[in-house]
Image (cartoon, rainbow over all chains, first blue to last red; front, side, top):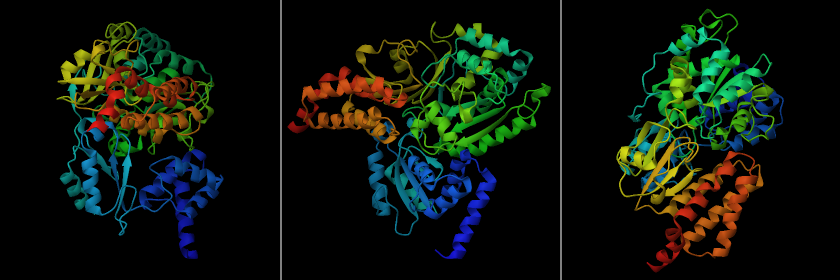
Length: 157
Length: 401
């Protein structure tokens, strides 16, 4: 990484710490902010957050690895989360999953080559009366059919 | 894309509420009066555990620390539960007014809503509502001119962890740590968020408060049964004509509910979500109530075509994934129960081993540290007990095909 890039990152993390505070309870909001904007949290960012909050980098990493919505590995620009819990499972999540996999040419857990999509399973997201359901980033789509799901992803930029 | 299907409105939550009404009435009463009404109402926690709300609030009110926290648990993660989503989207006024009344009662200065990450799309609307409350002086300093009553609410987001619905794990998460449950005691009412006295209550519990304040505890406790008063929101999903949220009095029988929601050829009903129990037809005359079938509201219906072992496998996969991993019974126990379920599916099992697994399940219920591991064996034990024929002959049937 270039030194100028590093400095820019440090500055950005510094601004987040200013925004959310430097107490330990600010850790998750800070990480969520980075995750939201950049889809994952780099090693260097983790170290910077740790330094500014005065905790060990391992603490930061342990928090990231605990929560399924935080990631330390590169993800696509859009994260697609298909619900795998019981209602969606019974209402045909498998068919939807297969259709999405075929269309994007990747399996669940993977990211497309152009880094546009990451496919993931998630547990119940509270749409059991309108299953199967999926989230694209923060937006929820319900009553999916294979066709509908693929169409939704087509419209995502 | 999304609808909030309220299929039945009952006598409390969906009976109509005017924003701010509850707070105005509450501030005319003394704290003791509110606690008295609450005790009279016999309201119990709507998250599922059913702890008396008045006791929790009395304990928090009795602590002398000037900094107390009131936390709303909106980490609705139990598979099959979606009532909080509907409440927060359709009736945020009831929930937030309930929090303000709660803060007044226990003397809390700070309110936090722990909203699950999956519900992040609600944030703009909820923030707008809070802003409106601040403008109308329902939040902020000297609320409605009451000297010394300062209270504000902050919304914090979860990040996709089921276990954070457990109150001490939720507090850990708020403090910026992994969502691992704490040992109790000390209880959060004495030492909670930041070591300060904290009361953690469910979204639906808060939504009940304004009605109790307005109409009185006596009116409330006449609804429902003696031990489970009031009404309950049931999140009904699965094989029925009208899935959605139903407000029904406690004590409603499972068979009555099935009738209302239009369920046909029902084989099994899972009450209480993945961590609840699964009952067969022969038990459909049981009551939905804390004293019989306790539930946080999830009712999942399975018809004759469903394979109960596949259902069980889905539940156990869920628990294996969501166990936080800090205590052994839950971390390893759930994996073993999942393995057992797969053996049953294949038909490659011995009764001796399955009996050992049942024993393990019972041990987990005692030995696990928090509610997750204490309740995760429920579907395994209840499905194996209630659907013996299907469960133990399945592999034979599958191989015979």
